[in-house]
Image (tube, rainbow, N blue to C red):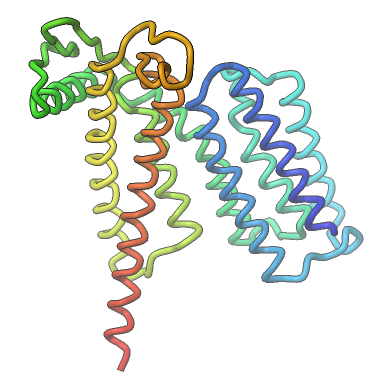
Length: 288
């Protein structure tokens, strides 16, 4: 019952933050925030299943009060500082996961607590990656990739700086078109998989480097396809769902753009599972 109450509290905090982000009209933040919440909930559920959850009375007072204060801090931030430009808003998953872990009865030095801290830091880390990655070289590379893809499907196009020049229109590739958010999301997904489904220690770092390279190349190709798709859209598609699928806004920053982010995330998960399966088969073949 206590474990169920903690999970319900986590779901309430997560849904509150994601709802505020959705109302602010920032779908990228919604996907970025959902990742640490879901991964953190998975770790907490595993912790409840692997060990007996102590009663509240058995939890040391220092940890109990620290957990309660962390949850109250999250509620205050969501109530009064719920704005995307507020740094405290980005730290809600970190503080909430650590606070709920302390209420589960974990000690300050528990490995699971450190893993939850890493998962909680994924949200501000994604924001920092989006802020620090240079826009100009990414825009130039994206324009060239998209123009080449358009040329391959028979659409006359060429890249001129960060612009894709076609016979009927010109597409400008700016910061939101470079795939920075998708790349940061995919790298955060890779860190999440390393925590939830760790690779064997032997050859781990070689595999991680290979996955980062595959992720980077795959993200740029998938984002290039999305930008190339914009050449076949219209500004005002008219009413209706089918008409919206032909709209520029749908694939530029709407639901269609998020589908490409999920596709890139699926590529990361698939590549990671293939590498993990390869390690497992290799280990079985070496067993006498």
